Image 1 (cartoon, rainbow, N blue to C red):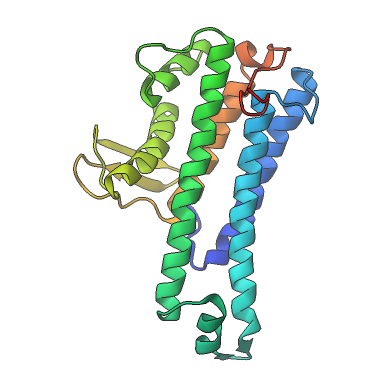
Image 2 (cartoon, rainbow, N blue to C red):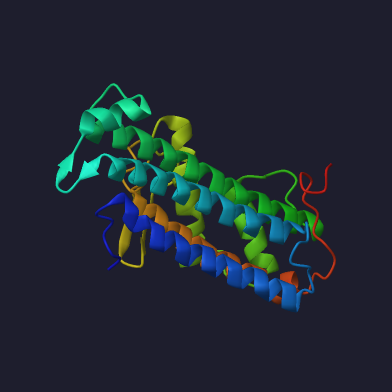
Length: 240
């Protein structure tokens, strides 16, 4: 069973673990695909961007926690001065909920966009990017096929679960689509059409992101992808 997130600072060491796992994948690519560590290859760009996004969220969390500590003396916390320092007009609990929920939703969106874009860049380089149906479902089916992975099962469910959370933001937190239930490292994810998404806590997001990074590792270490020795183009990084 995954460790419960009891305090927002509990996410920091988990973030570090994910960043370290991403770093291992980068080192693998440098060695096996002969990519320069500073390369603008789409694989390295995506991994760099994921690391930076995770780091940025971690810095914001630590910044807020450090600020709260500045107004804490022993067991005494000056809530009014703390709220004044950040310009909040509501109490501490409401303030934290507003700030961290906003941060979490942005984090979900940015990280998933980077994974989505990486898949598109790889498939475009292989000249197999779906032209008619470009949804994420089709995208994952295609990349799994190219990497000799099964398009059905737990790995596909992990990718789709992350997409479902991101897509629910288009509908104010409501899931629109196929029902899905999946358990990842003891954490339950349930999506029911036309119902609210209730599996998007920090704990859920960390477990899901970690699972997605493991799938990224498998894709990037597959023979088809690791044997791409020339840079995979990322339009933004290449200045297109």
